[in-house]
Image (tube, rainbow, N blue to C red; front, side, top):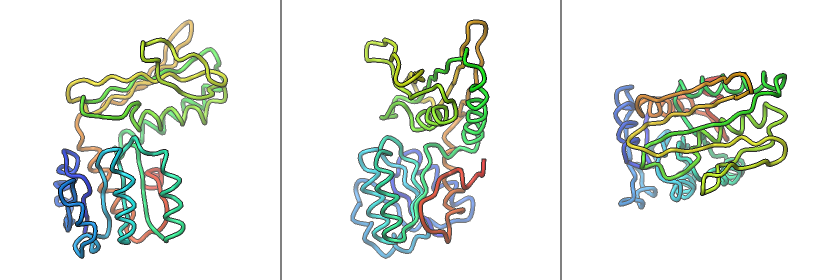
Length: 245
Protein backbone atom coordinates (compact mmCIF):
# COMPACT_ATOMS: atom_id res chain seq x y z
CA UNK A 1 0.00 0.00 0.00
CA UNK A 2 0.97 3.65 -0.36
CA UNK A 3 1.77 5.41 2.90
CA UNK A 4 2.39 9.01 3.88
CA UNK A 5 4.37 9.90 7.00
CA UNK A 6 3.50 12.97 9.08
CA UNK A 7 6.37 13.73 11.44
CA UNK A 8 9.88 12.57 10.58
CA UNK A 9 11.72 12.24 13.86
CA UNK A 10 13.05 8.99 15.28
CA UNK A 11 9.64 7.32 15.12
CA UNK A 12 9.02 8.52 11.57
CA UNK A 13 12.34 7.10 10.38
CA UNK A 14 11.65 3.78 12.10
CA UNK A 15 8.14 3.57 10.63
CA UNK A 16 9.58 4.28 7.19
CA UNK A 17 12.07 1.43 7.51
CA UNK A 18 9.51 -1.09 8.77
CA UNK A 19 6.93 -0.06 6.17
CA UNK A 20 9.42 -0.57 3.35
CA UNK A 21 10.48 -3.94 4.81
CA UNK A 22 6.81 -4.99 4.72
CA UNK A 23 6.57 -4.05 1.03
CA UNK A 24 4.86 -0.67 1.31
CA UNK A 25 5.67 2.48 -0.65
CA UNK A 26 6.28 5.83 1.06
CA UNK A 27 4.75 8.43 -1.25
CA UNK A 28 5.00 11.53 0.96
CA UNK A 29 6.91 12.61 4.06
CA UNK A 30 5.71 15.77 5.80
CA UNK A 31 7.64 17.51 8.53
CA UNK A 32 7.82 21.09 9.83
CA UNK A 33 9.62 22.39 6.73
CA UNK A 34 7.17 21.21 4.05
CA UNK A 35 3.67 21.42 5.50
CA UNK A 36 2.42 22.78 2.17
CA UNK A 37 2.81 19.22 0.84
CA UNK A 38 -0.49 18.26 2.48
CA UNK A 39 -1.99 19.87 -0.62
CA UNK A 40 -0.13 17.72 -3.13
CA UNK A 41 -0.98 14.89 -5.49
CA UNK A 42 1.67 12.74 -3.81
CA UNK A 43 0.04 13.09 -0.40
CA UNK A 44 -3.47 12.57 -1.80
CA UNK A 45 -2.33 9.33 -3.45
CA UNK A 46 -1.64 7.74 -0.04
CA UNK A 47 -3.87 4.91 1.15
CA UNK A 48 -3.12 5.99 4.72
CA UNK A 49 -1.06 8.57 6.61
CA UNK A 50 0.76 7.66 9.83
CA UNK A 51 1.03 10.63 12.19
CA UNK A 52 3.72 10.80 14.89
CA UNK A 53 4.49 14.43 15.58
CA UNK A 54 4.13 16.60 18.72
CA UNK A 55 1.00 17.41 20.77
CA UNK A 56 0.75 21.00 19.50
CA UNK A 57 0.74 19.88 15.85
CA UNK A 58 -1.28 16.68 15.90
CA UNK A 59 -4.82 18.01 15.58
CA UNK A 60 -3.91 20.40 12.77
CA UNK A 61 -2.10 17.62 10.92
CA UNK A 62 -5.12 15.33 11.25
CA UNK A 63 -7.48 18.01 9.96
CA UNK A 64 -5.25 18.70 6.94
CA UNK A 65 -4.91 15.02 6.09
CA UNK A 66 -8.63 14.32 6.41
CA UNK A 67 -9.39 17.39 4.28
CA UNK A 68 -7.42 15.67 1.50
CA UNK A 69 -9.41 12.46 1.93
CA UNK A 70 -6.49 10.50 3.39
CA UNK A 71 -7.15 8.08 6.31
CA UNK A 72 -4.99 8.74 9.37
CA UNK A 73 -3.35 6.46 11.94
CA UNK A 74 -2.20 8.64 14.84
CA UNK A 75 0.17 7.79 17.68
CA UNK A 76 0.84 11.28 19.03
CA UNK A 77 -0.32 11.73 22.63
CA UNK A 78 -0.96 14.79 24.75
CA UNK A 79 -3.75 16.26 22.59
CA UNK A 80 -6.54 13.72 23.05
CA UNK A 81 -9.05 16.05 24.68
CA UNK A 82 -9.83 16.92 21.04
CA UNK A 83 -10.61 13.31 20.02
CA UNK A 84 -14.40 13.98 20.04
CA UNK A 85 -13.81 16.66 17.41
CA UNK A 86 -11.96 14.18 15.20
CA UNK A 87 -14.73 11.63 15.66
CA UNK A 88 -17.23 14.27 14.57
CA UNK A 89 -15.10 15.06 11.51
CA UNK A 90 -15.19 11.38 10.58
CA UNK A 91 -18.96 11.26 10.93
CA UNK A 92 -19.62 14.48 9.04
CA UNK A 93 -17.13 13.96 6.23
CA UNK A 94 -17.07 10.18 5.89
CA UNK A 95 -13.44 10.24 7.06
CA UNK A 96 -11.24 7.49 8.48
CA UNK A 97 -9.15 7.70 11.63
CA UNK A 98 -7.49 5.35 14.11
CA UNK A 99 -5.84 6.43 17.36
CA UNK A 100 -3.78 4.56 19.92
CA UNK A 101 -1.89 5.83 22.92
CA UNK A 102 0.51 2.95 22.25
CA UNK A 103 0.72 0.69 19.18
CA UNK A 104 2.98 -1.96 20.73
CA UNK A 105 1.52 -5.47 20.63
CA UNK A 106 3.05 -6.15 24.04
CA UNK A 107 1.57 -3.01 25.58
CA UNK A 108 -1.87 -3.91 24.28
CA UNK A 109 -1.53 -7.37 25.83
CA UNK A 110 -0.48 -5.61 29.05
CA UNK A 111 -3.59 -3.43 28.83
CA UNK A 112 -5.77 -6.53 28.55
CA UNK A 113 -4.12 -7.92 31.71
CA UNK A 114 -4.65 -4.56 33.42
CA UNK A 115 -8.37 -4.60 32.66
CA UNK A 116 -8.76 -8.15 33.91
CA UNK A 117 -6.90 -7.44 37.14
CA UNK A 118 -8.90 -4.23 37.72
CA UNK A 119 -12.14 -6.22 37.52
CA UNK A 120 -10.83 -8.81 39.97
CA UNK A 121 -10.02 -6.03 42.44
CA UNK A 122 -13.71 -5.18 42.82
CA UNK A 123 -13.80 -8.13 45.21
CA UNK A 124 -10.72 -7.11 47.20
CA UNK A 125 -11.13 -3.58 48.57
CA UNK A 126 -7.99 -3.85 50.71
CA UNK A 127 -5.86 -3.28 47.58
CA UNK A 128 -5.13 0.25 46.37
CA UNK A 129 -3.57 1.01 42.96
CA UNK A 130 -0.79 3.36 41.96
CA UNK A 131 1.25 3.77 38.78
CA UNK A 132 4.71 4.95 37.71
CA UNK A 133 5.60 5.66 34.09
CA UNK A 134 9.17 6.26 32.90
CA UNK A 135 10.18 7.69 29.51
CA UNK A 136 13.07 9.40 27.73
CA UNK A 137 13.85 13.05 28.41
CA UNK A 138 12.45 14.14 25.02
CA UNK A 139 8.88 13.14 25.84
CA UNK A 140 6.89 16.35 26.34
CA UNK A 141 3.62 15.17 27.87
CA UNK A 142 2.95 13.54 31.23
CA UNK A 143 1.43 11.31 32.27
CA UNK A 144 2.10 9.38 29.09
CA UNK A 145 -0.85 8.58 26.85
CA UNK A 146 -0.36 4.93 27.68
CA UNK A 147 -0.50 5.68 31.41
CA UNK A 148 -3.71 7.64 30.95
CA UNK A 149 -5.27 4.77 29.01
CA UNK A 150 -4.24 2.28 31.71
CA UNK A 151 -5.60 4.58 34.42
CA UNK A 152 -8.91 5.10 32.65
CA UNK A 153 -9.26 1.33 32.31
CA UNK A 154 -8.78 0.94 36.07
CA UNK A 155 -11.28 3.71 36.78
CA UNK A 156 -13.81 2.03 34.47
CA UNK A 157 -13.33 -1.51 35.75
CA UNK A 158 -12.79 -0.95 39.51
CA UNK A 159 -15.92 0.57 41.05
CA UNK A 160 -14.24 2.18 44.07
CA UNK A 161 -11.63 4.07 42.00
CA UNK A 162 -13.13 7.46 41.23
CA UNK A 163 -10.37 8.97 39.09
CA UNK A 164 -6.64 9.52 38.64
CA UNK A 165 -4.26 12.36 39.33
CA UNK A 166 -0.56 13.18 39.32
CA UNK A 167 1.18 14.12 42.58
CA UNK A 168 1.36 17.84 43.30
CA UNK A 169 4.38 19.75 42.04
CA UNK A 170 6.02 19.45 45.45
CA UNK A 171 5.53 15.69 45.40
CA UNK A 172 2.68 15.59 47.90
CA UNK A 173 0.01 12.95 47.49
CA UNK A 174 -2.90 13.85 45.25
CA UNK A 175 -5.54 13.11 47.90
CA UNK A 176 -9.00 11.84 46.99
CA UNK A 177 -11.24 12.57 44.05
CA UNK A 178 -14.60 10.79 44.22
CA UNK A 179 -13.85 7.61 46.13
CA UNK A 180 -10.27 6.38 45.92
CA UNK A 181 -7.80 8.02 43.55
CA UNK A 182 -5.19 6.36 41.37
CA UNK A 183 -1.96 8.33 41.56
CA UNK A 184 0.32 8.41 38.49
CA UNK A 185 3.94 9.44 38.94
CA UNK A 186 6.24 10.15 36.00
CA UNK A 187 10.01 9.91 35.52
CA UNK A 188 11.95 11.35 32.58
CA UNK A 189 15.49 10.03 32.16
CA UNK A 190 17.96 9.10 29.45
CA UNK A 191 16.58 7.42 26.33
CA UNK A 192 14.13 5.05 28.03
CA UNK A 193 11.55 3.92 25.40
CA UNK A 194 8.86 3.38 28.01
CA UNK A 195 8.19 1.56 31.29
CA UNK A 196 4.74 1.35 32.90
CA UNK A 197 4.37 -0.24 36.33
CA UNK A 198 1.08 -0.67 38.22
CA UNK A 199 1.03 -1.68 41.88
CA UNK A 200 -1.94 -2.87 43.91
CA UNK A 201 -0.86 -2.46 47.52
CA UNK A 202 -2.50 -3.95 50.63
CA UNK A 203 -1.46 -4.06 54.29
CA UNK A 204 -0.03 -7.56 53.81
CA UNK A 205 1.36 -7.68 50.26
CA UNK A 206 1.76 -5.93 46.90
CA UNK A 207 0.79 -7.16 43.44
CA UNK A 208 2.81 -5.60 40.61
CA UNK A 209 2.41 -5.75 36.84
CA UNK A 210 4.84 -4.00 34.53
CA UNK A 211 5.69 -3.55 30.86
CA UNK A 212 9.12 -2.39 29.72
CA UNK A 213 9.80 -1.59 26.08
CA UNK A 214 13.28 -2.49 24.81
CA UNK A 215 13.08 -0.12 21.84
CA UNK A 216 10.61 2.00 19.88
CA UNK A 217 10.46 -0.64 17.15
CA UNK A 218 7.38 -2.31 18.63
CA UNK A 219 5.49 1.00 18.47
CA UNK A 220 6.48 1.51 14.83
CA UNK A 221 5.53 -2.03 13.79
CA UNK A 222 2.13 -1.74 15.47
CA UNK A 223 1.45 1.57 13.69
CA UNK A 224 2.18 0.00 10.29
CA UNK A 225 -0.01 -3.00 11.18
CA UNK A 226 -2.81 -0.58 12.12
CA UNK A 227 -2.49 1.18 8.75
CA UNK A 228 -2.71 -2.20 7.00
CA UNK A 229 -5.84 -3.06 9.00
CA UNK A 230 -7.44 0.33 8.27
CA UNK A 231 -7.27 -0.11 4.50
CA UNK A 232 -10.72 0.16 2.92
CA UNK A 233 -12.49 1.10 6.15
CA UNK A 234 -14.36 4.26 7.11
CA UNK A 235 -15.08 5.95 10.42
CA UNK A 236 -13.41 6.30 13.82
CA UNK A 237 -11.46 3.30 15.11
CA UNK A 238 -9.23 2.25 18.02
CA UNK A 239 -6.31 -0.13 18.39
CA UNK A 240 -8.50 -2.61 20.26
CA UNK A 241 -10.25 -3.37 16.96
CA UNK A 242 -6.92 -4.23 15.36
CA UNK A 243 -5.62 -6.62 18.03
CA UNK A 244 -9.04 -7.75 19.36
CA UNK A 245 -7.90 -8.01 22.99
